[in-house]
Amino acid sequence: MDGFLNTTLGFMTAAYEVAFDWLIDPENWVQFALLVGAYLVAVFIFEFWVNGIDDGRFKYQSHVRFAVWNTLKDAGIEIPFPQRVVEIKGGFPAGVTE
Image (cartoon, rainbow, N blue to C red; front, side, top):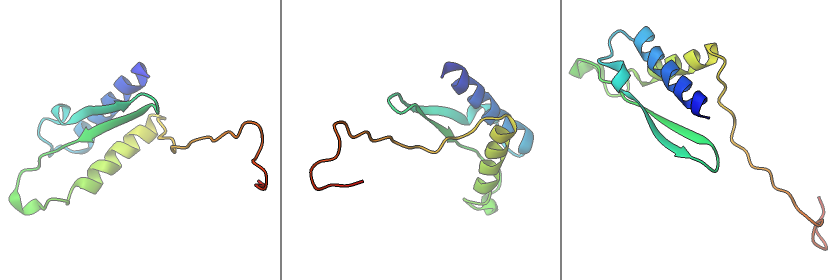
């Protein structure tokens, strides 16, 4: 997990630096925010600042998300679909079928 987190953070920062020359200090805007150990879930926060009041609050969000997604995909990093496995030990209760 340690190698994965460090590598992933590096790729995300690189996505900002390469794809968006309008970002101010991209290395300071990708943060490792949370790790839920039982589920091995890592949460990263992406913040960015764009010069200009008229740019609109949501104008660049999609561009940034696609840059991160494509960078991770190109690096062979997959984002797994979360799932749980339920095991019923001892069989089903009386009257319950599969």
